[in-house]
Image (cartoon, rainbow, N blue to C red; front, top):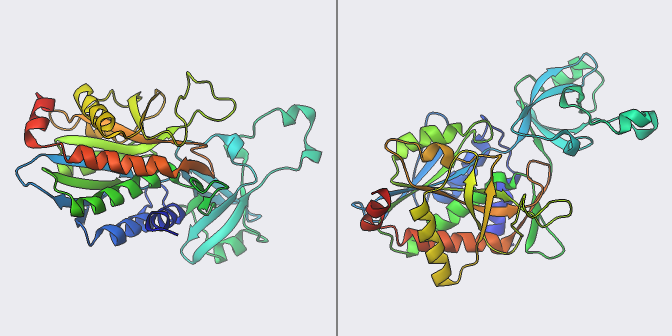
Length: 356
């Protein structure tokens, strides 16, 4: 397994729901501590600084640590766990899925219970099961046994899906691709900058609580005070049956995404054009897309102070906000190459023109 796949395995298999991202943050620290100075803000976002030209602009690369998951709400008398969502879920992807509960006494495996089809009426089979009706079965006799095992309200619950290269190993399946893939990009970009001169100071920021309202991006931006911002996040791949091209155009393996807009931001045109020109000059593949119903950390970054020119660079990803997502290794590698090339061009004069 190469270095990047090892990094991606460590990041995706760590548990980190909104508000409980510490395990993932520790993985980031381990990989960044020898190449950047690190601090953590009061909400928990990690900020890794790599200085180039101290007189140059401050460039923020942001990717969120948290994944969509759940939280223990309460334990029934029979020992079943009722839970709350953390982030956006669609009920149809949840039933009968395995989950991991992070308790004070260690990890516990459970399954989101479901009725056998033999017990469902024809009418019930056509209805979605609502999340409030679901429960997690951890295989105990009653509430007392669940509590003795360490389960308590507030415990984090995450999907179970080990990182798995597929039949074509460039296609990779894992949980938490949204957005540990972006976190891995930050590590690789910062590592590449060890051997590259850059006319700026680069801040690799791993934010908390993005999935519940872009909260970490707001506090971390106040620490960095950036001149330019990039959010690195996933996009929605449109190369699977049932998705119309007008809803999602990107395809796995065809390059990273440049978002034309999302629900939280319209990108800065000058910064977008600089990235496009860089990609075209260097022959780096890329794709355009838009996500009008979702936001990214750039939604907070671009409104800081007098305004920060921002752009979202993403990855086409299949099956986001479910237990298992798929991405393509070529898209990851191209995103790292593109960001390094752009960073080398963001000198003070260039940024002043973008801000003008």
